[in-house]
Image 1 (cartoon, rainbow, N blue to C red):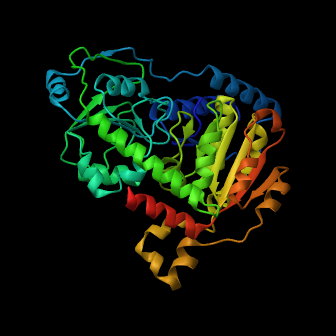
Image 2 (cartoon, helix red, strand yellow):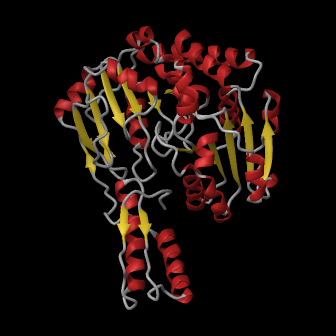
Image 3 (tube, rainbow, N blue to C red):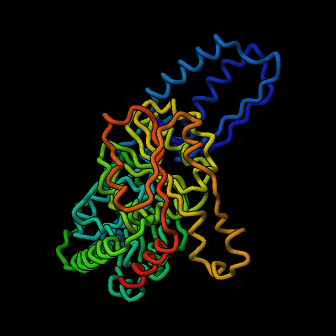
Length: 438
């Protein structure tokens, strides 16, 4: 089942005789569009009295919709093609001495994780997998790329001679900077959903490869070059610097929260990460995981909690939603629907006093303009919001308090909101130090 929806389906004033059929049709259409195209579908049902359906008919359609969701398969038949790259592509791969595999975000219906891992293993290539890429833990996976790839000298030293891309357009700042620097490097994009995903306009060849397809690699020559060692060394060095920064900083920062969650959350949980800074912070401070869910990457704060509820209901897995204070307030009406999640549900609100991502922009130094119009700090009592919706509530203000955050399912009897009040100045200083010192 899809977590979220993308296409608008408008149903105008409907005649009572056909209304139930139209609802059924709209339900099938919404799910199909969401899965086949990857994204969201919004249902708008503007009924006019007395044409509204009876409660009995609505219950019947709801039951049928639930059944369709549980049994749904995409309207397009699942492909099981064998995809053999052309000789031109095989020659490009075989002549490469520094191949790099990059996996951007991908929903579960359009993930090519198997092929990405297959090529990384065969070519002995470093694998960069962004949060939301659905790539599992892998020995050649680069963890600290968001830290060291912001450094121009490091980007030059690690420059590949061939890029093999999977999934959607990368969204982390480090990857966008790297792809811009490496825009003249031959790039192959293994595309799972026939969508233009090329922010730097650097893709040379698009290869249609659906998740059900098998990539034939017989013509590719296995590699054992030491290019991967360069990435591993940079990764290890950056990991040490990160650990040192986290230990030396006395106040609680966003980085401490993301580091703790990544080390504490097991694979049985979904981790829904809000937009803006959170997905970048997962890459900078956290650890790669297959169960991370993102919406659009680095933009927008709409519907974060709602998406997390959909993920919990669709996967029937316990779910943790990490969201900034503004995004939490923006979607706080979704708290009314958490009762439908059906699984243990935790919301971790990182309260750093507003939109901290704008601190990276020149407008940050315009003191009279920046705070009221960009960072927009708020003073809402989140504990009152939690209690008003029947949630348990905890507040964490110090590093030691993170130890009290438990993801033991047996101890989560009702939805829980954990508000982590972090030091915004210390957090941004730590980010900049990690970016510049790598």
